[in-house]
Length: 312
Image (cartoon, rainbow, N blue to C red; front, top):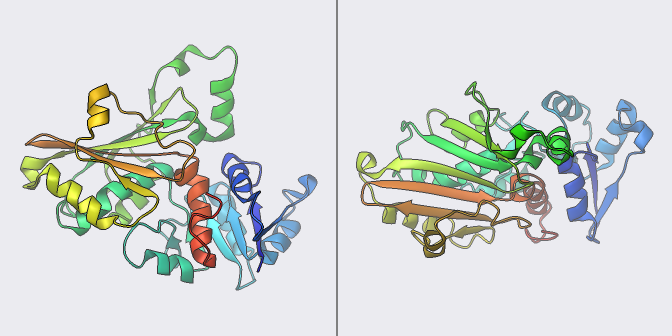
């Protein structure tokens, strides 16, 4: 059977990448809207309801409006915006989250695609909270460095302009109001009682993302070995999650962490670096792959019951 797919917001960074993933697939028929009708609500509604799977690659408010246009009970929505990530009735589109998550994605007609920073953070913390190694009440801090493509078309244009503004040549911390839009899902889907103190940083490179979380092993009464073992248990058999060796020798030998090491893949690499008293947890991914479009296509594959890696 052919799955009919429509991407609402097909000209954005996420939408374009989804089209690239689907282009070579024979099991998918992509429905396209004429350029002059992209803002025509009637035509958009027609295509949304004609689709078996509709991806919403829109701002939050527009995603909510698009979701309200659906009258076909068979249309599955996969929303790449922040709008529905903690809304009851929407399955969180992270199959590796916990046992039973794939069943939830398969059964739901409403799937919220995770945020890029949130995906890396949740994949680091959820196994440790589930294993009781990090208490739900624990205060956690996290730093994330990401390529500028995560900022969308406007930011991409700024970084690729010639000449480049001098301020863009160095890393730029942002989200300094401590209200980043990913924070609600970072708490809700880790089991933490409160979101992390979170500092995102955008750098002068196109894509790639790494989240780091420092922990006091002394305060938690645990070891780096126990943290690493929890990851190996939680992610056993996961094809898109690679638990790297404890205190990864290759990274320590070079002395520097490669933020772009998962680019052009749908993979997440997890690292534990630790001494006897402290640990730093790190997760890296492609912010346009597993951090956005790749995750959306993976969720679609789970939902329609095909090989989870098809097209990825």
